[in-house]
Image (cartoon, rainbow, N blue to C red; front, top):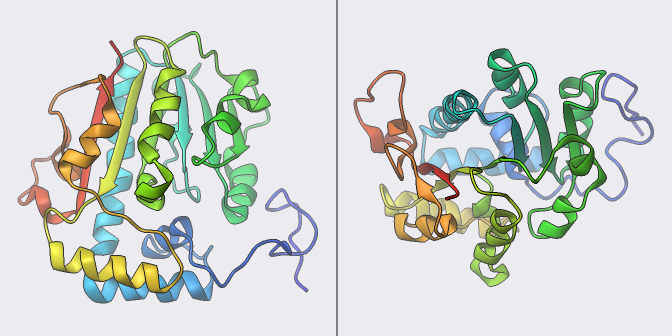
Amino acid sequence: MPTKDDSTGRSGPWPPPEFDTGIPHSARMYDYWLGGKDNYAADRAMAEAFLQQIPTLRTMAKENRDFVTRATRYLTRQGVRQFLDVGTGIPTSPNLHETAQELAPATKVVYVDNDPVVLAHARALMMPADRTSTAYVDADLRDPASILTAASVADVLDLGRPVALMLIAVLMLIGDDEDPYAKVAQLRDALPSGSYLALTHPTGDFDPPSMAAITAAATGGGMTFQPRSRQQVERFLGDWEPVEPGLVPVRAWQPDVDPDDPTSAYYWSVVARKP
């Protein structure tokens, strides 16, 4: 059985015994779409099934990553010095902490995910020698308390001061039967006034038949994938106030260059501030 050495920060059997490589995972599918190699056959098969329905998904994945960079720069320029990135995915340069710390070196970042591949690469590629500025938490958005009470969160972040909560293309992995709105509200409620929420979410609003097809493919492969409408995405904000330009297609959120077709990437996006 293959073993990982310290190049990934983890030793022992790889993949670990509890890790089922036969079930696709969105982080590894994104890695495949972005040209990475940290994925398995099930991830590639599901990613290709999605591509058969929406051939431009690779470009959409890149647009989603570009939003992270733009939103991080915006938040850092607003004086935010703490980020909690839940559902971070496999490291893809530039990582959030690289973008933020380039503008403000004192910025602190905690990454959260629950996938062993993400964990291994986060430890190897994203964690500096000084663990007081950047940390990784192995936890699940379905259990907000496990995030908020994690030792690494307490060690790195001061939840009495504003925090940017990043929920980038992760909420579609939680079905309505698990009440994702309550889970996001629990995270929002734990943050003080002046905090921000940045999120993106896939939607069927721009191409209902194609999104319905990939949702069916995901369900058939044992994967939860739930796109949501603009109104449904807006509910995640609670009473937080969207900053300009509001809740818009991901390509239209403070773009570096005005897009020719803002709806060509099937995500809603928003940054909102807690009053």
